[in-house]
Length: 432
Image (cartoon, rainbow, N blue to C red; front, side, top):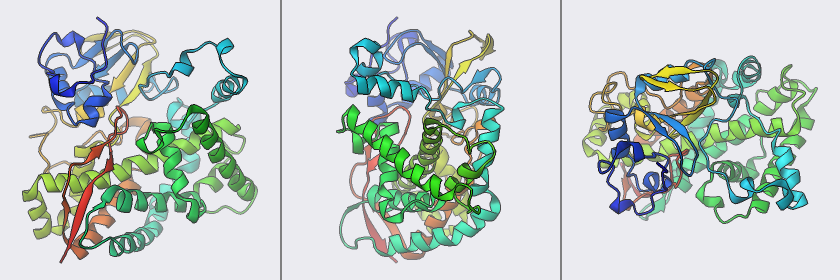
């Protein structure tokens, strides 16, 4: 049964028709925040679900918390080396070499070397990850906290008063981009390029108008600027930033250009999309649950636990993909060697068997940190503590200044099955 992309979201009923026909990789449903019923049915009737044919090809969907945990923690059976996302090929990707221009063929050849350590298996994964992990080690995080607090305070103090503005642009993107520039030691006045490069890779709305050639040129600009930074730092005394660590690390100093680009993109996306969309999602969640906003005002000491609940409730990365290296059984279903297996974190975080009242946003939820948003096993998000710290510090500074961040219009969500986020969130601030 061939699955189709859903465009008429209003006419879609996930409980109507055979469960076998469901394909959860539906960008329109995510954009409309209308994917919840589909995952609820899959968890109930087909928790390990096979889509044999469709726009994203054949793949298994794993939708329950415990099954996702099983896949995520078994990197020997479920490999990252053949890709971590469930994407559709563009028309250009599907065309044979002889139908491409010389420039397009050159790009295809170059991208064959595009790799990142999250899409590697041990031992290469472990060695490259260990090279950059000191940037988010506890001693460096402690040093970064004061910087985050100072910048968060400045951003909040400069927000428009008495008028509506886009929280995503003024706060979520601004804070995360400033911190990315810091941990890369990237030119601060050019920091917005980091957001653009992230959006190019994840299909963000801000770059939807760009042609394939323009996207390629932007990524080459990314590689070029970071190569200049690399050359400034290689064989120089170490500095506490990611480029210095990569340029001087024993396992990364010989990276080929497109391997370097791959790891840069991983670190940019990991430090940008996830945190910025949790910042926006937290404001929306509190507005949709005013009793929880009252609870926050009465008990600001709940902020650390609330941060975990925000990340669970938002789930900024909807899924991750693996490829089976051998035949295996998951949830009673037989997975074959070579099959694509998609872990839908967005579903596992709403699993009724794991979380009581999973669709509710509860800032003092017990075991709130037991969510899937950072993954598990060897690929658990390296920057999870930095993300949590940015959210905690930001909310501490918000509560010092504002009685409420009021959402005054409908959010505009991303049209993506991978990045679960926002491009617009209209708000007004109310000072204390």
